[in-house]
Image (tube, rainbow, N blue to C red; front, side, top):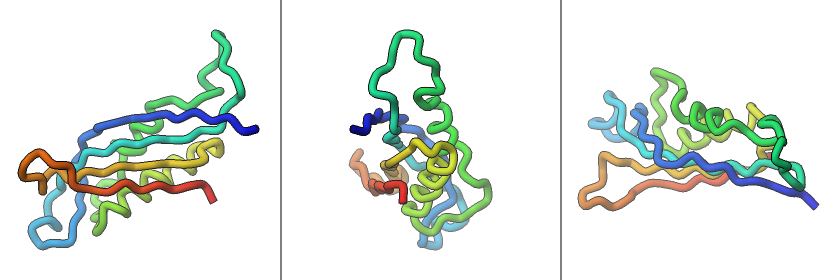
Length: 122
């Protein structure tokens, strides 16, 4: 039996160069990004289990905060794939990544408009 752990980093607000409309293509847009990572883990974590048995949350946060500078992502789906690719490359134990991206600039009445991208390791 495989055991897993879900790690979450939620509601990071970042400025990303993305969009297809002329008013979007020259300035970064504010996005709210949340990431859930499924990590293959040991069956049990004892009180003295080292961090290496899990994953540092900062690795997940930095995959969002350190998106490539100066890159224009036409679709926010591509932003999600960039984050997923980074997390898969960092750690072979990452089996699944779910990324939620909300486009803050297009909300008119507090609604959340965006995507949820789920990728599994090939």
